[in-house]
Amino acid sequence: MTERHRRPYSDVTELVGWTPLVRLSRLAGGIRTPVYGKCEFMNPGGSVKDRIGRAIVEAAEAEGRLKEGGTIVEATSGNTGLALAMAASSRGYRCVFIMPDKMSVEKRKLLKAFGAEVIITRTDVDPDHPDHYTNRARRLAEEIPGAVLADQFYNPANPRAHYESTGPELWEQTEGRITHFFAGAGTGGTITGTGRFLKEQNPAIQIVGVDPVGSVIAGYFRTGEIGEGETYQVEGLGNDKIPGALDLDVVDDYVTVSDTQAFRMARRLTREEGLFVGGSAGLIVHAALERARELDDPEAMVVAVLCDWGEHYLSKLFDDQWMADQGIEVEG
Image 1: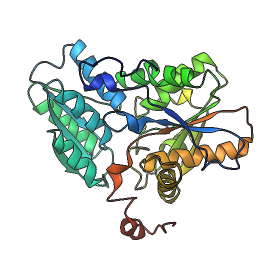
Image 2 (image 1 turned 180 degrees about the vertical axis):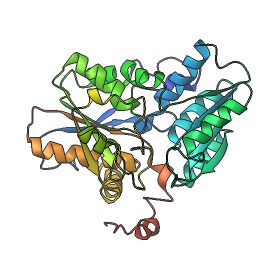
Image 3 (image 1 turned 90 degrees about the vertical axis):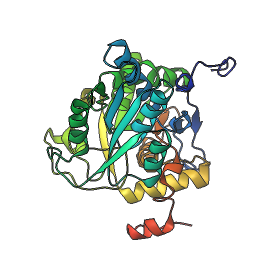
Image 4 (image 1 turned 30 degrees about the vertical axis):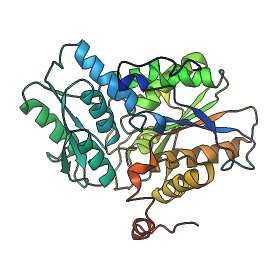
């Protein structure tokens, strides 16, 4: 880590990874268990998805599916699209992304800033509906000559990227003292890949998934049955189906957190810790702090993923009027 940035890089994707680990001192005040945040928003594209964007593009190139002048198509909540667009712009590829309509206007504009084409589809459709964003993306990839579907929800390059980077980084940064790892699952890549690596180093490490209220993943983990999903406002985590990149055998526990709890915690992370993050980070940290309080163990070490940059949500959770429109009372 001390050698980072001491030499020039070939392109922007080489900047991905080795994000800092920061102790949450004020939010965890009075809690004896130390809690740390893995600052994935400090990746060059502003999110944890930078890791898989680079990996997916490189895998497609190595397999000969993505060639010069090719097109990358993906269904995305925004951050994977940004990661793919960043990698694509440094290599000269075209990008076409399908986004659900609940995603922030900032993400849409960022994708377009990178030169990507953005198609907005409805959030409130069944996963089997033709207009579901994953189905629209699959059709487009088949229709566009020279296109490849990034397929983050099922692409093995997704969890592998975290197995090869996020997991080893955390093991080194914590000097092997990590006892609990908290992450969400949109595609499942982060929790699966990181969890696999950490479990190989120490099977006693607890891998804890955090789900928004309304997602079906936590319920499926507990019962083995896919329940009826409901709409929620947190972006990038949770799902209305079980993604193929998610290996629940790696996960020890799953907890749920509401939009209100997630958004309030994200705002507190910014105001009390100086960590400008989005709602998904608030969701994960809320659960991590609750568990740390229950553990009450100064020898434990809880790590939470801080998924993405708060500037993506200035028109949403950091806007008092938007919060009021959602029925969420802001604090301070």
